[in-house]
Structure formats: structure tokens, C-alpha cells
Image (tube, rainbow, N blue to C red):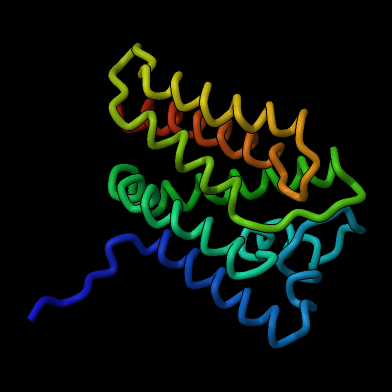
Length: 187
């Protein structure tokens, strides 16, 4: 009989933490999502810092969460295998911090929740997987044009409750993080 292995602790940890956050949302009537798992401009208190990093765990419902988890579970494990758990966790923390701060600065009257920025970070990071020294992979260029172009277009032409700005920030963080990590792995 085959045993089940925990092949991607950071990705799986994010998945289970987000599922727990959604469960807590239903048990508390939305209180935990509003106060712990979404970020918005507020006075600097300990809860602000919880929200600044916890917002990636909050989701508006199971459909929102499952869409993010599906992509995270497909793209995340190969990235965790390539870069290692500690490095990938640092990239997730960096992207979470950047997207949360940008939300507070540029969109002070709205809140942000969800893992979309992290998913976009992983997508752009994965397009750098075959990078050779001094060469920019064509896959990165194509993914950037398709994903970031689509997000820019949608941000300008569609009025919805989706933060294309966070998707773009996550993608840019993933690209920057990928170049940084590649350079450090070469050493």
C-alpha cells in the first residue's frame, strides 16, 4: 500500500489555512473575514498587521476559494520543489506584504481578500523555470503579455469586485522574485 506524502508543505499549509479561514467565516457570521482575513486602511494596531498578512486566507465564498486553490495546487508544488519551502514562503510573505500595502495606499476605501496575488506570483514565477543565465525565457514574455495584458484590459474595461491591481502586483512580485531567486541559486 502506498503512503501519502506531504510534498509541498507551504502550498498545502496555505490551502488548509484558507479552508480554515472560510470555515471560521461561516461560524462567526463573517466577523473573522472582516477583522482578520481582509486588509484595508485602518489605524496601525496589532490587528492591522494580522490583516496585512492574513488577507490572503480570506475568501468571499467556496467558489472564490476553490478557483484560487486549484491554480495554487497545480502551479505551487513544482515551484516549491524548485526553490525550496523557505524560499517560496519568503516569496509568498513578500507578495502578501506588497499587495496589502499597495491596497491600503491606493484603495483606502475598499478591502482586499483572497489568494489571487499569490496565484499570479506562482504563475509568473513558473514561467521563469527554464531560465538560463543572461537570457529571458520566451515563456515569461508570453505569460506576461497574456496574463498581465488581460488584467490591464479587464481593469480598464470591466467593473467588477475583482482586484486586477493585486493580480498585476502579484505577477510583478513573482517575476522579480524569480529573477532574484535564480541569481541567488546560481551562486
